[in-house]
Image (cartoon, rainbow, N blue to C red; front, side):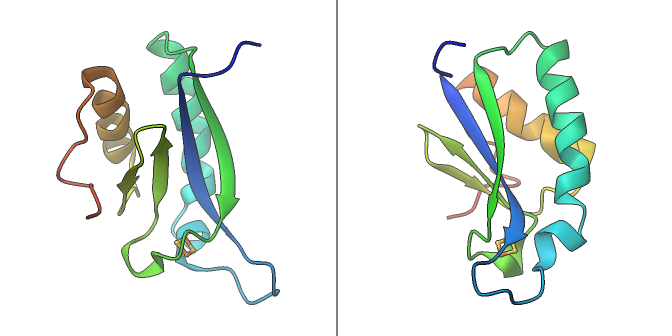
Length: 102
Ligand code: FES
């Protein structure tokens, strides 16, 4: 595999100190990863990698994810529509405001 052009890190609420899982996984962030992977394949976006990550410390605005190297942070990613918005952002080169975190 070649290095991806983009990498999406989806908050899986993992925490080192063993505290209970945060809001993102409870709100279905991990379940949406399957849709995310399928949608990337459908769109032919083979240069985008996806990984689950620990708590991104924006729990009050979760489910959250980050897109690198753009350093775009998105919140309230709790639906297929929201995932579509993130992928549209990558394709267009501009982050969708509806879900963008300042
Ligand atoms: S649990 Fe996702 S940002 Fe904290």
